[in-house]
Length: 83
Image 1: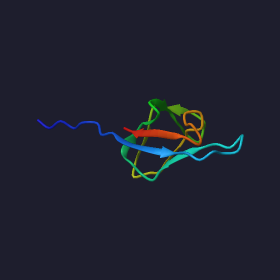
Image 2 (image 1 turned 45 degrees about the horizontal axis):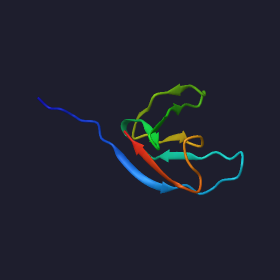
Image 3 (image 1 turned 180 degrees about the vertical axis):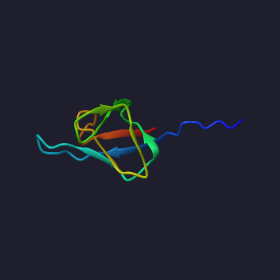
């Protein structure tokens, strides 16, 4: 019997300060089918073009963009994790 485990990818990044009213987006070039995003341990839902939130992005080898403005600390170090 084969067991496939979830894979986590983590990176620490310094997010530059942005002007008031600007949004910070995390762009993912492609996935192996599904991805959930966490910033500093906080889950960031995927929001599609119709502004419908979802727990995760689903799409094989398709790009995805997550709006992470509220979750990051501009000008400071942030841990971003992908599941």
